[in-house]
Image 1 (cartoon, rainbow, N blue to C red):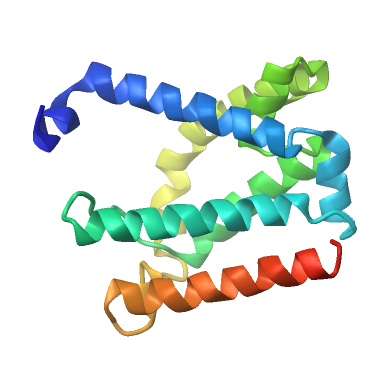
Image 2 (cartoon, one colour; image 1 turned 90 degrees about the vertical axis):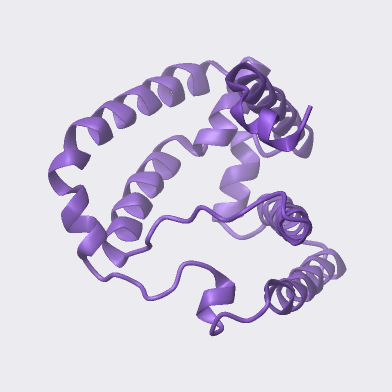
Length: 187
């Protein structure tokens, strides 16, 4: 099967998405970030488990994407960023995160773990939030997308369109330094 056939095969794409989602949820659970106490520990700056897991995921994803792009197997599909959309999204995400102590990914993992508060509060919140977004976005989306439009899409663009690896390597080193410092400090 060629790469183009894989891309065009919707059932395979759905199956791959489901499989990767299950693996992602499993890893979130194993990492402990579906625990309410771990999330609150992060918010109160005494448990950096969430930061370590997220930085590790960014590192692996960034290097994996760079390799796939270098091989011609992937291309970035980045929405035009703007302050309006980022602020609105951040406020909505922060409200849900602060009220429940879980983000959408950890809600799914916590539901899989059997958490009733994640099932009731998280699933209901996701459905309500999705419904509100679907209702409101057609009316305010164009405003938000135009408000504070940012002139770049990727870190490579931000750095003047440098070669992808010239952006990936320093960011990877920075992430490794931060992870090492967190471990050294016992956080």
